[in-house]
Image (cartoon, rainbow, N blue to C red; front, top):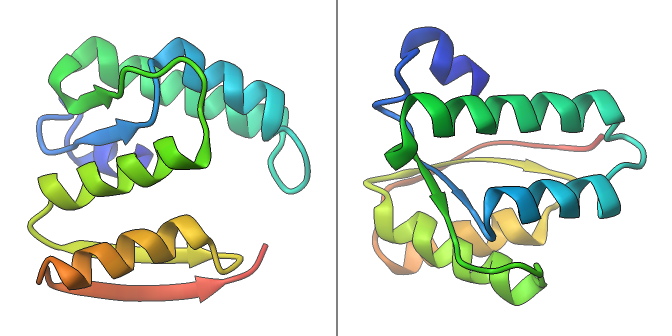
Length: 121
């Protein structure tokens, strides 16, 4: 997101889909994801970027209507990603099942799908 914002500060060419309301999403990150390799600083950066996007272009941040996040909600988000996409560019970290779900769904939908990189952290 930060790379897109460098080239498009208004976020008009960006759509970020999160599986809950922003406050709930960030709370989930602080509660469940603050462990190696993700640091408090990483989560603070994520929070700042998402809040900035919501401020400069509310339509660019699609918040799903959930308060508690489960794997089902992430899978529903993948459906939204495919629905809003013309093509998919995937960077798969640690063999992420979520990224794989999006890749599979985009392929089934007939979207051009580029799997740029698989890597481990």
